[in-house]
Amino acid sequence: MVTVEQARQFTLSLPGVEEYDHVGRPAFRANGRTFATMWVTDRRMNVILTQIDQSVFCAFDPKIVYPVPNKWGSHHGATLFELDHVREDMLQDAITTGWQTVMDKKPNRKSPKKS
Image (tube, rainbow, N blue to C red; front, side):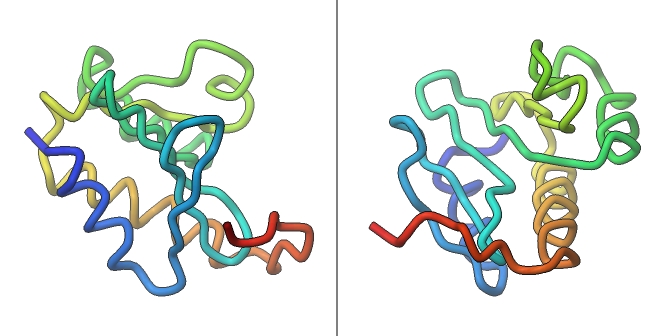
């Protein structure tokens, strides 16, 4: 089990990460790119992964880790983690993987201004 605050604090501990509001949800970006969003009331975290990384994490237990049920999940690697059931080390690995993926890309110069 991972609390919302534990997930938030770990995500913010990664270099260059900033939190911002994304349609009423806390979201996290680095290098000008969003890589995670918190669904606080649902106690879920959405992490953007490559499709290969998504398949690896989802293989653990599809009731705990699964693609977002739309094109963002099937084509863009958006992956939901149930905070009440996921192991903390697994979530931290996924967050780090999503963060590293955006850090490996060119900076997004069209990123919205900080609020």
